[in-house]
Length: 85
Image (cartoon, rainbow, N blue to C red; front, side, top):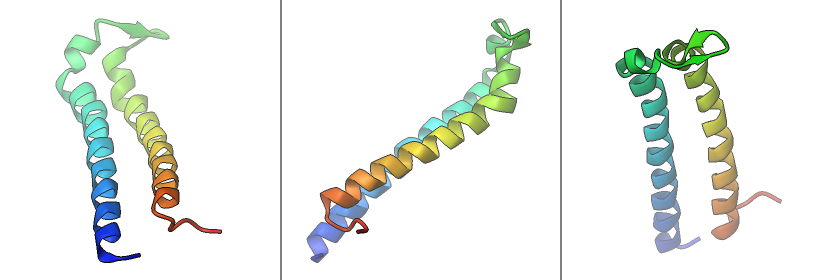
């Protein structure tokens, strides 16, 4: 792969990382810590929504974001022909 394609590949990879980390920050920090009082007005399964975000939501969203990142990177690898097999 030439230098221009490597730079474009890395730029798209960094974009994916920034977007996914921003989503994770929003879910874990904003929803789990900063907005917990407003979210506690809503109940899910008898638990306040803020409690759910702080204890389960950030972990579940992190795992989902990992899957999304793998899916996006597989597509990116195919696009730039650097995929395995």
